[in-house]
Image (cartoon, rainbow, N blue to C red; front, side):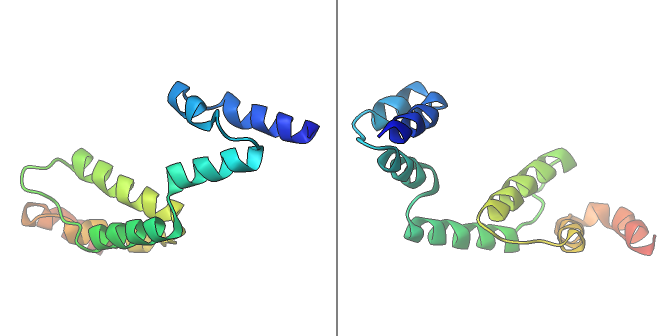
Length: 117
């Protein structure tokens, strides 16, 4: 019982105001943990759907017209970080090649120089 109170205190001390009140009705630390897990990660079906969506976004990733390299990198990093969190593993070479492939034709001279070096 004492350990459960400690665990509840630890779990709730880092929560936002809204999350804290959502967990107030939970009777044990395990209930709080499960509620937070479903809230932030979703159920197994939600994780599977999110993983599928992110993989599709990664595969279809292309530079948009008028997009800067910084904007492209921000979008790419967002997708890759979420895939990493879901357990996908990438090699550095794979990510570098993906970026080079998705650039628009205006970047062709720089792509060629990078590939040759």
